[in-house]
Length: 137
Image (tube, rainbow, N blue to C red; front, side, top):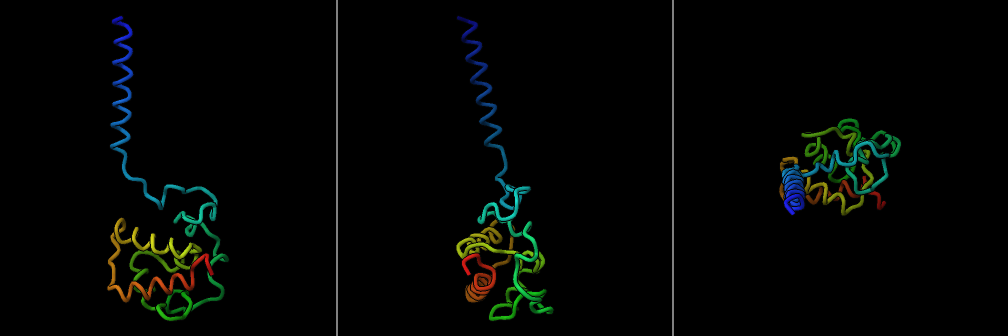
């Protein structure tokens, strides 16, 4: 009987330790969680854009003064908002859904510390991104 009790206590301790480690695990970073998988394997994966081939981005050269972003309403706002943290190449490689653009915006503000502009500028930038870099067009 003592042997069964000791085994049971050991199993409970192992479960508690495992649960403690699981609770202590940091929140996974969506930018690295799926690293190594082929580009385009998951359209909701933010790494898809980072691993995409350049020819999957926009056609043509775009506006050289704006890092190659296509001209259009919101191009300049988008350039200045985004290049504070990353190059325009990341933007130009995107092919995600409109909904995913909204999610990425929230993630960049909440998890990456992006400074969020006023609501009108945010709307202009998201409209530009969805118009030029959406998988829905």
